[in-house]
Image (cartoon, rainbow over all chains, first blue to last red; front, side):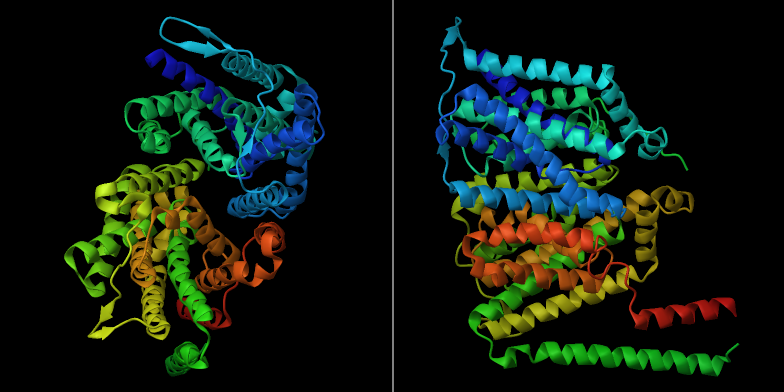
Length: 292
Length: 334
């Protein structure tokens, strides 16, 4: 029972982590809490479902196409809604309200286009499970874990080792200085939004497969929890998002199993608040000394 | 250089002009129910009044003190539930439950604020958001106290000084009185030593600290005062709608109030009022779009922000205030 809960929790946590990475990357660069992220995650899942059912595509082509299209959506969001605000040096809260506007827009667009009821997500990869003594792991869970692991490693390599990763880190550290060094900051931000949205789609589709259902509201709670995960680990820190996602996933599964399923969503936030009281910058976040 | 007599006369003139404007606005507000608006419109006007209290109080934290709170609905909920429970269990009247609800919300804000207000930016935002989700989830699950998802129906209508408030017109005058009380209290606070400390923290907390402002203390004060008025709004809501359930106090509610503050203009009291009127009415005005209504609402938020990032009235100083300010400067230079 306990191991089973842990495994379920880690699976859920790795999905949160994938979503949290999008929050943390955008925050790292723009210091903006991107509330449209949850609805992008939901949009990706719906798009993949539609490509599979309406156009009859196989799972993998549908998956890839929806990742690309949703990534483009991330770019459009940045260019259309956030870039004009950046140009005007608008306060951060104005951008935040803009991302909330995007989230309301997308959520209701999906409701109008696909209806507000829960949709059945076809089980594209039915592979069975391995039974151990007291618990079992389904192959789907293993695929989710493995996919998350590979993507996280890939992302870490991208940020640490490649030229564009270096430019991303430079932009996060000091946007003005990066600009002076000849980095095309707007291109880097666009790339970040593409990456975040693409990863959110992967997470959304995997959640759809895992629970075999999608609905227009699914991005709301998932978005809030991924945001909580990003902050728990220390917002702006990539490994922090992964750690935060896993902690929130495991703790809420345990809480639902052992305390009360009604308090499931409250536990994640309670842990977050408790951690922040002890470590105000999150688990892996570093205190930034403000220079005068 | 003007003489003291001239100066006093000028000041008198400003005060006179200002009180004339206030009297004019008040007279306008008092006759609204006489326009024989239909019930639906009156309900919208009354709800706009409730949102004005919420937006003005959130404006104190976010607009004047510069701290992003995403959990204003928590204090709204605490006020509403405190009021509803006191009224249902003990039969207390509105005149007792309303201050009790406001004080309860303020107390909770104080207890939450002491450990958490040292957090900054996104960290404070997620803590307030998380707290408001916890409040909602507790309200949803604590069946013995809140009846969970069934909500609390049949909350008594308020009785003020022997008058039983039942019609929309009576409710209108009650909310008008509450809005005026909130406006005047917050106006006095903002234009006092306290308010200057809040604004100093918003402008530059480090500079404020080195000037001797105890930033944690003032942040907690701002947070607690704001929660007090949010609790008051919650109490009114409970006694007005006479039914509350956790669905009325979701994250969306916090977001809506924040949108009102930002759209109207952060750090502007008239801005918060205009923002609440616009965003209470916008979904109703867009009703002809039917299913596309909320899509349009989202689009309006996206389009409005780049047009005026500082909000409709943000950064605008009214002429009246400006003259007064010049006056202050003149006094200072004498």
